Length: 367
Image (cartoon, rainbow, N blue to C red; front, side, top):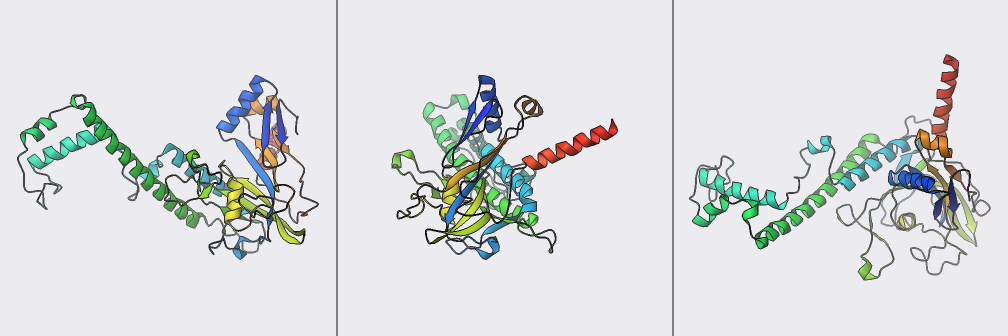
């Protein structure tokens, strides 16, 4: 438990972090920071098996090489993944995306579809320069509209019956699903393009040595409550029901526990999907020890070896002045079981404090 400010942080025995405001104002501040995604979290876990330190030496359960990112490019990766999620949530690509040839045609509403159908009939009656006249290939022909079609072209949306409006509304819903599916596919391709451009896994200098992270980004599907299924599922990029999920994983050390190989890992989720860390580790073939839901039913570990470790609520300058840094860290409960062979921290708190110190020193020199 950390109580250095008006926000009380309780690190629970598994993966939970309980943030309690000492008063209404502090509670509102904490809620705002979570809502604005100004919270960075790290977890520790002990997983079954020896996960290699270097992702280049590992493949997933399907035999696919693991995705990776060097420590120095983590900031770039996080920035790109957060932007991808923002675009998915707002259901619209960036302005640059919308100018690309492969960007999907936008979804139409019911009134738009009604107007488009009227315009199509008028084009057919007047000759269509785009070659859309029925029975023609060059747009040279015309046809006479039937009395019903002619009357239809003069109607407004408000002239339609409820049944007619409902029919267009259903078409609009189908068109929206078409757009979301095509947008999801487009953003998935954009993520691949960005990865090729950024080269997250490559070192800037061949002679440099730095930790390399595993990047687990399998989309996650939450089964409908009516199914009664508790387990989350791994989906595909093309599945509209699948939610984009990214987990950063660094191997910290190896050991033997109860005669079995285990690995201690640092996990940094970039999203907040239910069971994300547990599902991603199991999907890669290294379930968290003690996790009988995604691991083995025969697992005899005394608890699920997943622990909330560090959290930073990055407040505004006014928040920091009032509540302090809002950075909290709990002890490593697995250190005796699996000693850490290296130290890694993905939370940018220390960089932020170093930048503040440099800025303060420069200000003092000028004064």
